[in-house]
Image (cartoon, rainbow, N blue to C red):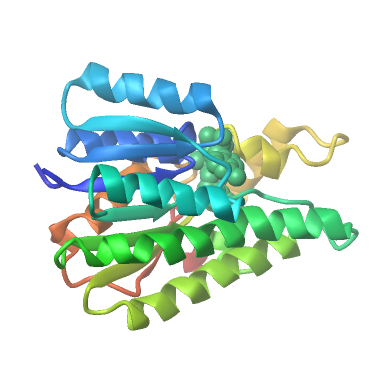
Length: 256
Ligand SMILES: NC(=O)c1ccc[n+]([C@@H]2O[C@H](COP(=O)([O-])OP(=O)(O)OC[C@H]3O[C@@H](n4cnc5c(N)ncnc54)[C@H](O)[C@@H]3O)[C@@H](O)[C@H]2O)c1
């Protein structure tokens, strides 16, 4: 197994790609801290891991944009495990479209996409360093952090920030921690509606079809498990010389 005896913490793992990553990492032997503000979703992920019978999982309810709660979560991990092999900062939100954005919406988008990832890293770093060279820090950005978003310049702004943050950390945390950034394209999760269903006057399903047909060379949506496979690879020793990678998982969208 690729992640035997490894401790992983995945934010936003009560649903979608985060849950798929928790299941795949546990199936490779990891113990996963399922960090999510949705207690039910987190518990469901833990139940699914336990049903598989490989690895282990524990639910931790948290809003990762609350700095004091983030510090408390890493105190919990320190006391329970004393180290962290994998920190996967996955939480994010599409945020509002266009430029007609209130200050409150702006700050909320920054908090959910950037503040959470920053402070999880800030408080997770000592635990990653305790992992004796088997430490992997992974971020979820987006293709919108690599190229301009069709829907939201603000989303490109915050996800571009995650790309820059990941690159910088791959320098400053080396050689102890490998740092990589996954940039998914359109993935079939509950969040997809947030991208394609923004305009109530436009049929979201038609929007998805047009996007896939016109912009995705593989001509389909990505499944959460296909991102999770990449996360497992980056978390594992199979990626032992991989750091500073900005990796699209987008069916070829950014190849144009
Ligand atoms: N779905 C896509 O097409 C797509 C594409 C590119 C990037 N992304 C990025 O992927 C990430 C999530 O995507 P998903 O599709 O797996 O979403 P999802 O909606 O299936 O799951 C997101 C999870 O995060 C949790 N969450 C949200 N805010 C939180 C907070 N403040 N604290 C703790 N938990 C919180 C939710 O409860 C949910 O369980 C985001 O960073 C998003 O920007 C998604």
